[in-house]
Figure (cartoon, rainbow, N blue to C red):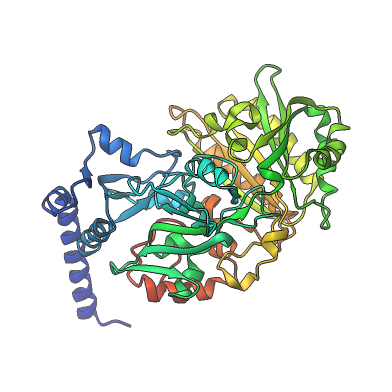
Length: 493
């Protein structure tokens, strides 16, 4: 036990630290405006449009609250901003596209936004087949340069997230059967670490940090640039896509069809993204889906035939170039999906088993829930089935990402009008459906992709029980003061 006088002393030190920190935070304007920055670096405070531009988020649910924003123009200024924050006890968050889901981001209060939007360069070295991007580059910025150079890369299912942010967690997507995960293509990061060092991190340089930052990267540093190995185009960069709609009556047959892809039967070139969504015209739940085949059109049509035999309503069936497919499929739904400033209360599940019965059970419950609670009718449940052939070809121990054998990524994405208080109801539904999906996922417990994690999961569910001990040990080495602690944080003790 600690003697009373030591408790009093420790308490006094704690109070002094808290008071000093509070004073420093109130004086954040002075600290930032008195620092010497590069000419193009900007410092903004609440009340200006520039501050909004530097902090506006795709998801406003449980979002961080900032007292100031710095948009560095140079790596040196990133280092300076980090050192000002850490030496004065100011919590901070470095952001690229500001597309994160997790509710743990909301633990940052009155902190510093370190906006990387000026790190927006995209460079393709055609002779080496490499891509180098700044830390603020969004996925849609790489489409044309990569495609026009004759290459491809795993690109996810939306155009608006930052490519570095995706990579830090893994970067899953429809081409995992052919191209693997985004992090599998990563050659190196340029990272500013917790002590203000700027390092090049790769398999041959600080390899332990490189391991950790491929699957748990938000816990270890600020990435100002990243270099990737591109892959040659498959099928000359042409993708066959079918956009379909099925009414509720056909949902059971459709979900049973999905289940037939268990046991390694999902072709490496085929991906299936299905959505449970409310149709306001008929006032009922429906299934919409995009089936994509990264290969010859004739082969793709054969793979689509079991789905076409269900006689769905076809919204589109055509070949798209790789650089336009994400932004144009499903009637250009990407533009709607990528709108900033909405509530996205997300509960995620990884699965290595496809359960048609579970999908149908949840479908029925969602239908009743949406009918009884119209405020949620803009919400969706996504069941994305991605082949894992190329992802599984990479040794599991080579990166921190723990779920290479996943073939289904399920996102329960609940949204409502910000003027209505639906948080408790959303939480009850989201947790219940997540539990149901997890029960037949094929994993012994909930497995959750870190980039989509809600923030209430056990750390083992996010980072994997086998890899978490090493991550904790590396966290103590690279971030002993836990300054990177707001994105599904790994503890230092």
